[in-house]
Image (cartoon, rainbow, N blue to C red; front, side, top):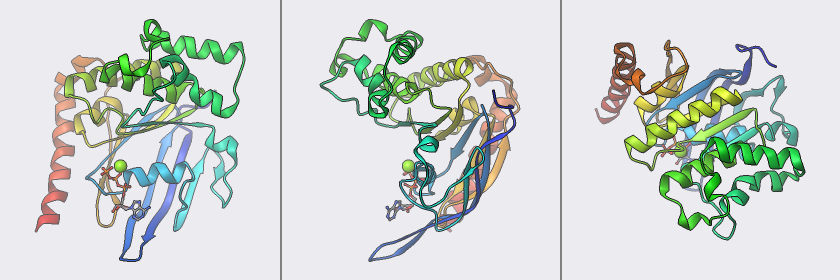
Length: 267
Ligand SMILES: Nc1ncnc2c1ncn2[C@@H]1O[C@H](COP(=O)(O)OP(=O)(O)OP(=O)(O)O)[C@@H](O)[C@H]1O
Ligand SMILES: [Mg+2]
């Protein structure tokens, strides 16, 4: 078991420049941050500030233009070994379940891709289905699930290979606030049991504060980090925390910071 404050993910001075025929985009400029093991860290910021680019760098879909990325003690090189990528589970805004598979088969799908077979892995899927309260829909097709259930199945699928790291890119962005907060709390309770290291990307400040031990605020053009705010509220968190004056103060402070960026960009 890893020490709680040991860095699990580290970006050090990372730049990412996209060169297209029409323009050169500095998607990320001098990005440095750490995510301690078994903590949830959120990244908030306006559209286009490079949040998803951070996830794609970690997934080794794209390479940084400068700087270093570390996962555990491994520093990203030209060829990132599969064992590193396999430490990560991905959860996106659209669950994109495969319509011809059952809900259970969808949740188990990443295991199939990695060739993880046998009773141990079957049991992991059963436990996840149970924890996510989807057992009774195990044999149903995704088309018979509500939006919230589909999203929950997407979260469980991201966890089915037992990743040490979860990269969640606006996972509940398409849901209304009540449902989103319900799924936030469910994700927190899964995390309390499984203890993954999580990067949680969202546009929603309230959600970022609710989920995380630390919030990074980004600005755009170029994509950069402008603030790092530790959220000193104890876990486990419940809906009550939303009414805590400390919670509200964090929410207001981060919202004001983002407002200042928006204003600076209009002027
Ligand atoms: N493959 C690419 N080629 C060229 N430009 C790209 C590419 N991928 C991303 N970009 C640009 O990089 C910037 C950051 O994009 P990114 O998708 O990381 O933003 P984001 O913060 O995730 O935005 P959103 O909140 O809308 O999801 C944008 O200006 C985008 O147009
Ligand atoms: Mg994005």
